[in-house]
Amino acid sequence: MDRRRFLITGLSLSGIAYACVGAGARAASRTTTDTPPVVVREAGLPGWPLFEWEQPGGFFNPGEGVMQPPRLAVYADGTAYADAAARLPLPPVWVTTLHDQALGVLTTPAGLMRDPDKPPPGDRPFDQVRARTPSGGYLTARLEGWQDGDPQHAYPPPVRELYQQVEAIRRHVLHAGTPWRPPGVMLGVVSIDYRPDHCRDWPKGVPTPGKQLYQEIRLPHGPHGLPRATEKVWPMYRVGSNRFVAATWRRLLPHEIT
View 1 (cartoon, one colour):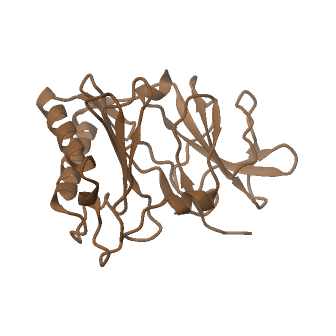
View 2 (spheres, rainbow, N blue to C red; view 1 turned 90 degrees about the vertical axis):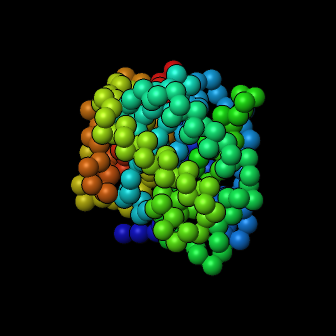
View 3 (tube, rainbow, N blue to C red; view 1 turned 30 degrees about the horizontal axis):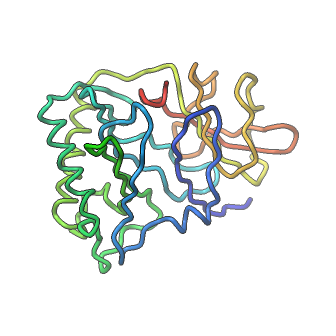
C-alpha cells in the first residue's frame, strides 16, 4: 500500500464538479516564514461572506484526514455561520468591529509576517482569512499556524488579536446558535492508488469523479445516501472496474447553495 502524503487545497466552486491543481503547484503556493503572506485581491462572487475564515489545506494520507468546513463566515446581513453547523444573527456592532479589525490586518501585509525563528507546526492546515473591501472586492491572506491562537507570539499583536476575536465569535455561534442543516452538501473525493480491503460501488445518481488527485462535487439535493466520515479514514468506493476513491462531505454555506 502506497502511503505517500499529499497536500489538498480547497478551491472556490461555481458548478457541479471541479478539479484541484497538482500537489506540487499547491505546495509551491504555501507561504514561507521569512516573507509576509501574500495578500490577494479578488473581485469575488455575488453573495460571498463579508468575512470568512477557513482552513482549505493540509497534509494527509490518501483517503485519511478531514474535510474542514469554513470555521466562521459572516454575511452582510449579520448572520454568522460556524463550522457550517450552526448559525446566529450577530449584533451589528460585532459585525462592524470584526470587519474593521480584519481589514486593518489585511491592508497591512508587512504586519502579517511571522517571526522566522518561530516556525509553525508541520503537516497542519493553513488558515485563510478573507474580508470584503469598501469597494466591493476582497482581500485574502494565508496564515500559517494561526488557528492555535499563536501561543508562541510569532505574529504581531493585531494578527493574534484578530484570531481571539474570530474564535470567540465562532464559539458563541456554536453555543448559542441554531443548527444549520441545508439539504445541499459539498462532496470531497480523493483518488487512492491501492485496492482497499473494504469498499462499495460508487452510487448511481452521483456524478462520477475524475481521475485527478482531489476534487469537490456540489450536491445541491443532498448526499444521496453517501455516509459522512466519522473518523479520519474516509469511506472507500470502487469507480468502474479498477479505480478507487475515498469520499466524504460537509454542508454547504448560503453562498455555495445558489
